Length: 278
Image (cartoon, rainbow, N blue to C red; front, side, top):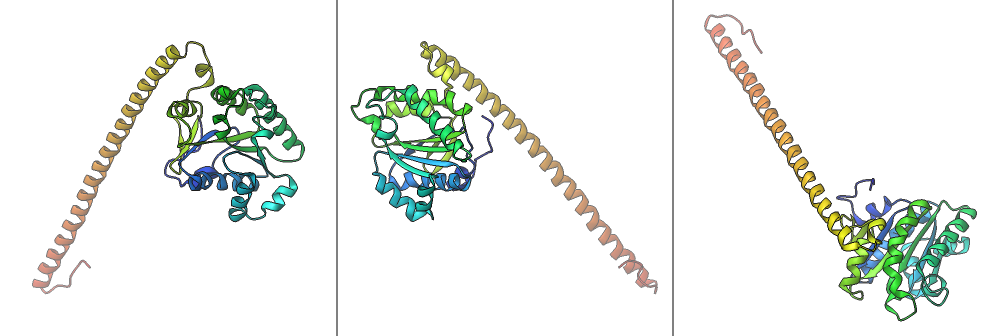
């Protein structure tokens, strides 16, 4: 995944570097952590002339709007222009009364095309995924949907943050969610995800066999990275040692020259002659 490095950046700085085609999951512990990521996500989108869509579920639409109004200027203008929309699961994931991954992806494609026709540069979507904890038909297709998004997003002018409550989703579900998102936001940190599994591998029937080979490859890749890192560190340390030695030699020579000049001046003074060196 070729992306600008995010290491050491603040949450806001990292979110501002997100790009069209990115697929992230936000795993949050509480509402404050949730909106600490979503507010800058929408601020950046509005600044880039992208259409921003919030799919509410755990929070009410009004609650989302109230939070955005406190944090983002001109929310009402963005709503009026169509640059910002806050909708519910019934307008999106469960629009047909049930959930079907391919249907939701078609809806996203239609929304991208509509946004481009309206003059927006792309589509920026975030959805509260707690709707999948309900008993509506098809919710068991959640993880399949997340994996298939990784086919869809690279081909369309859209980026997505899928929001997951760490307190409400089971560890088993969260493991699959982590595996299906190239980028993870957790603990107010945007992280490139080395546990990510590409859809070609995640969706295959013999997943354990593919997973085992992928894990072994990751082990080899990480070991190679460690070797290269140690080599680079050793080379840097060697250069630092040589630079320190050069500095010591150079400074030592300069000090020796100063001492010799003083001795010459002292001898000249004894002979009644003016000093030769300043």
